[in-house]
Length: 132
Image (cartoon, rainbow, N blue to C red; front, top):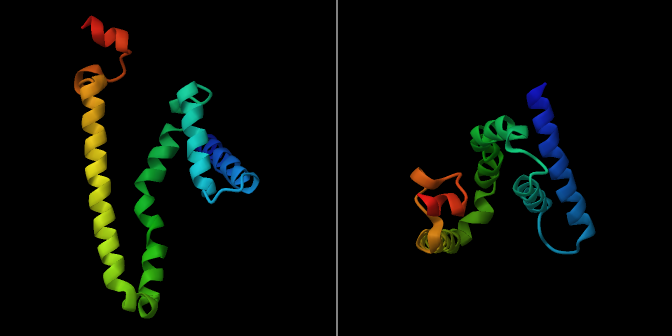
C-alpha cells in the first residue's frame, strides 16, 4: 500500500505538470513542469522525502527499460536516419562534451563558493558548517 500511495503522489504531480502544459502556452513538456512542481514541494516541505523515496528509487532502477522503445524506433527508422547520421552524431558528441564541461565548471563554482565537503557537511545548515 505504501508503494501505491507513493506512485499516486508522483502521478498527481505528473498530472499537474500536464495540466500546466495545457494552460501555459510555452513549448515545455508537462513532465518538466511536474518535476519542477515536485521539486518545489520537496524543498518547501509540502511533500516529505519519505513520502516518495521508495517509489522514486524503483522508477530510477527501471529507467533503462523506458529507453527500449526509443531504441527500437531508431532501428526501424534507419532509412530516414542514415542520410543525416553524421550531423546527428557530431551534434550529439559536441553537445555531450559541452554539457560535461559546463557541469564541471558549475560544480567547481559551487564548491569554491562554500558548497562545502559533502562527506563531512551534507545535511548541515550553513551555521552548523561554520561552527565546525
